[in-house]
Amino acid sequence: MVLGAGFSGIRWFLELDQLGLTVRCYDAAPDVGGTWYWNRYSGSRTHGEAGVHFLNFAPELMEEWDFHERYPPRDEIQQYLGRVLDRYDLRKHIEFAARIVAAHYSDSETVWTITTADGIPKEPTFAGLQSYTGEWYQASNWPAHKVDFHGKRIAVVGTGSTGVHLIPKLAPVAKELTVFQRTPNYVLPGRNHTIHEYQAADIKKSYDDATWELATMNLAGHACKATGRTVKGADAIKIRQIFDGGWERGSFNFQMETFDDVFMDPESNEQAAEFIRQKIRAIVQDPGKAELLCPNYPFGSKRPPSGHFYYVTFNRSNVKMVDISGDGIELYENGFRTSSGAEHELDMEIFALGFNSGSGAERDRYQRQSRQIPQGILDKEAWDIRRNPCLWIAQHVHSLWPSLACRETANNDCLK
Image (cartoon, rainbow, N blue to C red; front, side):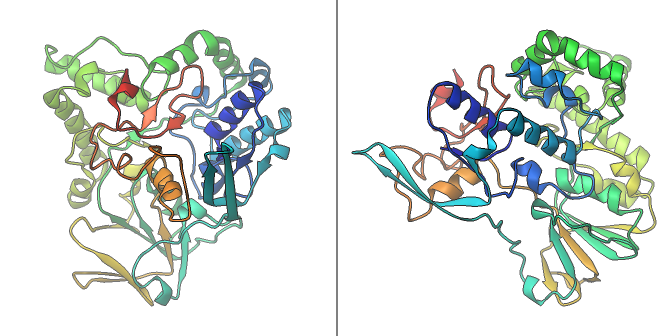
């Protein structure tokens, strides 16, 4: 049984099928894609480059497919995964629109019996949602129909990857865009561009020998390699030159191909963080907004998203920011009200809160009272990251999609 029909689920399905096992796949979404099915909001695209968004098990499939942008948009990702299902006739083994609500294991028969329900994502849990009379949308469950943003007072709650993509797309069309931010992000420039036919051919030519080798060696699964450089021992001019070069290349090239000690040495990390903060202050003209957008935690402690005109969007006169780092929010009939008493009248609210993936999804599956599992497997305490601070989320699986096996374990042997 495979739960999920995204990149990871499809690859696991194929591997198990090739072992001669009987496999059935379930996904809460009505079609293929996993999170890429639900990511239908305006501006949704990958944070990794096109060259690492292939399933590498079938050279013939690579020859039949071309991505058209450095960071493929959501629609292309779903089309690609759909092509994989159709190419290998997998749809007949997948039950869509099916959420697993119970799973009972028989020790005597060594069989799982599962119960499914309609795949309906949870609604946001903000107080007052039922009293709000305007439109609201959840980015992780975006409607299939086109949403009209023209001339509306719109709020975006959240400045993670989803918000970073949405905000620049909505600003030009909204009458007023209000961004509610709890924690700012280190947003790296994406430098997106179209991939012409010669670049596409080069990606395929170097894929097996260069791209995939780099990706399988990289902890994050990206085609980046260590440079051997360190901030410690380098002069200020050289440090600036290297950071400027990484910033120009954009995204994970800045994070992973500038200085190796940025991840390990606090002082080196602070130099990278301050470089980005200086970029934010240089781009955002309003000093107050700029400081709200400047993170004060170590760079890389959260995955930095790739942005496309994110910071410059805050120079628009119709874009406001509300700092809720020390202020709660709730909905009332006309919009949002903060715990300090400020009211924001709105026509539309968008909850850009992302997904409770990895450990959250596992806990959601295995903590239901109706579920029975074999002794010692996935018990609640073993999966509690607060009890086991050494838990590791993204376990690398050799020759599979990098970082596809998302689970936690209390046993440090998994890191060997």
